[in-house]
Length: 454
Image 1 (tube, one colour):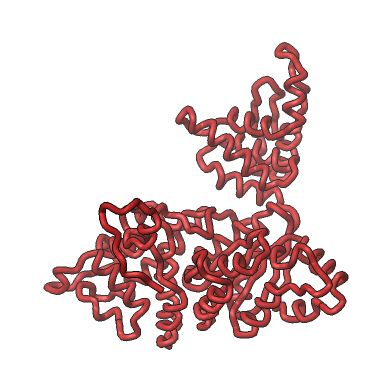
Image 2 (cartoon, rainbow, N blue to C red; image 1 turned 180 degrees about the horizontal axis):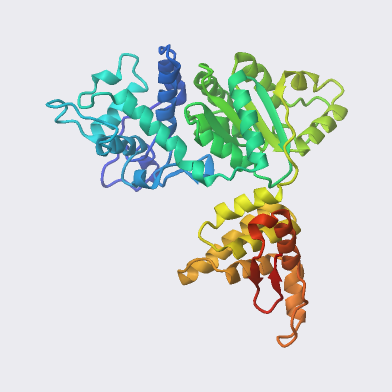
């Protein structure tokens, strides 16, 4: 129940009074937008509204709250003083190649007016894009802006074997509107690929990563945040679940759920059934909502262990509902690692990338070790405000390798290291997998042997 009391200037300071301020950025609620979408017969118009609704959820710093690996906006669309819809409206006004303003009409139209109109268009069934005076074809302009935002992150994704497999499975799941399960090893790029795929389809798919907390309220709050509906701490699980179901009633949105092993209970009792997994089957998949589950091999092992502990539960119904269950590659190939290294350090030289690949081939968690070494090397270069050098990559690799650190501590400065180190073996192995590209290349490591790829 709301209160109309207003605190005077002489009253004690209470920070809660600012929680409902209009300065707080809030996105459009999915359960209300779904009612508007139900009135549109055209699938392209429904996808356009869902894109605007998803764009309104993005924070003012330019990153999506559910997907931190990619920027949510291109550089020319970032502005901390504007709301997400105002940023879209400002782009429409400044992009003269896409939008042609009508002559003599819409003189008082501003980006703020257009942003308010777009928010109303996503909620009001009587609102139409033709009602806004100032643009000749606002619908085509919005579709062009949507396409530009979808392709803004394409250059940040390496086409690895895991990426190709994840994208193909997600495309199939979206087209069939069913349940899909993808299992693979840790740190192989599953989440990265799924996030990039969802960002390219903001009007069709929503990504969320499950939490290790096993209570129902946290589970439904994560789904509610991903689709954009009320999920405050004051609401109970039943209230959040009803709003989630209202937001997904149109079956236009697809849920991509990462870390799916947290769907299963951590402590199984003889009478405890996997309620979250049953909810996805009974309340979402049965109603035609596409759901893609991404997890590690522990999901199948945990589900098998759960069947043994629960005599009254069987996983036949779950496996029978799966439209697709691909097994993702366990390891990335040398070509995949070269693509990731080139993407991680686009301005570095070829020896630095070769050193990264060699380190990834000999370390545990190939892509994870490559990522950690890259971030450490970038940190060294940013301190001195210069590009990344070969020495930065080598220093980062030596710090991340306990064996190498112990060896350096035990050896004196005058005694040279052995002629063939782990990094040297990794470089030779990486070069042997792609001899045509690196034939005749010389890699000079300070204080170590000179590698000549022949």
